[in-house]
Length: 245
Image 1 (spheres, helix red, strand yellow):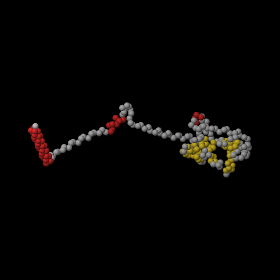
Image 2 (cartoon, rainbow, N blue to C red):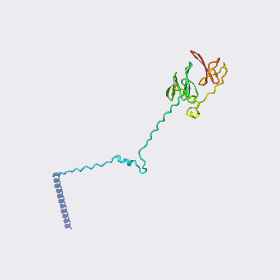
Image 3 (cartoon, rainbow, N blue to C red):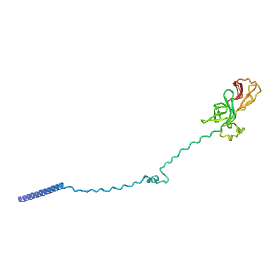
Image 4 (tube, rainbow, N blue to C red):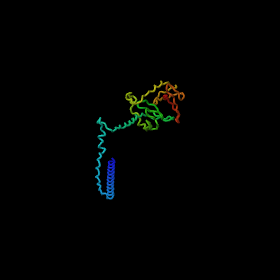
């Protein structure tokens, strides 16, 4: 029994010695290989530069325009927004016909002019009065200044003379559709006898009547819609009856 144990021990000792020898040999071989590798010069390696990759061709943006503008649901649809131009401004209204002129009268209290709008009746106007659609801006001996919508027109009296022979006043209402309605003044009161406070029989123009001889009524007397006006001048006093406005 002891012999077997001894033999087994010797066998194990021999295996351990052999294993230690093999380990040392492998270690020495590894050390020798490491020294050779470290002592050897590295081999020269020539690196080859790879050729440059071709640049990809980029399609121009114009090539996508047709595809971007068309949709899958409607061929007539596109991203272009149609901007409607603003409507043109309306043309300016035409200048209405100028009124007729029948002369200038100055009795000392400022010039007055006998005028008649187209389709209206004749009467005397002063500076600042409205003659139809025009405003009387100034009265001059041979001309008149009219205003309409901020515009000024200077017209000679000869250009405004009534050459229609009264046809303008007899025009039918349908022909005057563009003119404002004309309101006729009430008929003058009946002419009274000489000497009474009443308008005379002579029509000076524009509804103005003369005074009767011997009329002693005061200035400003109103009778039958007419007012007595007495004007003083270097040549004397003048008397007339004007419609009450």
